[in-house]
Length: 318
Ligand code: PEP
Ligand code: MG
Image (cartoon, rainbow, N blue to C red; front, side):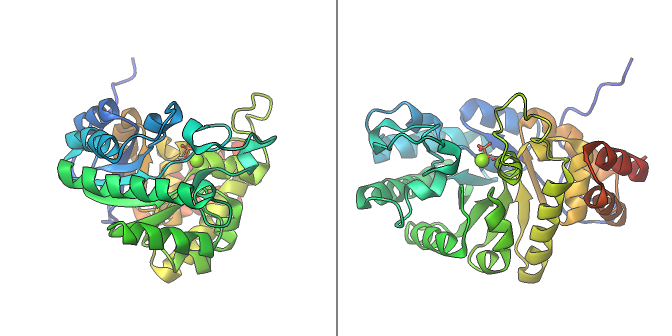
């Protein structure tokens, strides 16, 4: 019988030679937050906020939003929480935003594009401002340290406009998600605008391969072990080392212990995944030194395909 794996994240997680790695949770509601607290998550790397909006015929009031965030955050009082602003789109429609139907929603007006001045009506931007204010209020009520990030950013100017709005709402730590290949190609300029970035490997992978993440026939492309994805992450981390911008990962990649080691080797310092995945990820990261993680990362980046990337990392990690 296989021994049972670890059931909680014990203590601040570091590599054996002391590189601090934040082990944080992806959550969407108070139940997820309870689970995150019970496995010892150090905080939240991705609070998805679509839940209260997706079915809403009218915009939730400021008070409803604030109370909702406070309730979701309360189980994690005292810990840092990164809230992602609304990631709506034609595939995740929000009735009161009156979004036009689109033939290809994944490539359309989604995420921050919904609110950005390039495409948005002024009343849409006000929805974002109210969400940001509610996030600040809810975090204060729950006693958590708030960070905020925007989804679907591709350029430095989009990042700058979001940061300006978030700071105006009173957010101290402002970042963006890296989910579009252009955001990596624009990294030197984009990183200069933000306090941190968090890579959404689910969307980044689908956009790198132009392969719908929900497509069964294309599932082999949608694998974060794909060297093309890891090469982009490598490029991002190299740019982030220059600007000294912290890089996190909050896509499915962070839930895989061997891949988590690769991410650490690339320079990622925060791993966010479903609570159930965190103990094994924390345990794996705690057993390696940074030089070994870097060797694993180099091997994966240099591989020609997914099976060779996995095999090369297995060879390094044993
Ligand atoms: C991602 O794209 O990897 C991500 C974390 O965001 P979501 O899965 O909510 O699109
Ligand atoms: Mg995403």
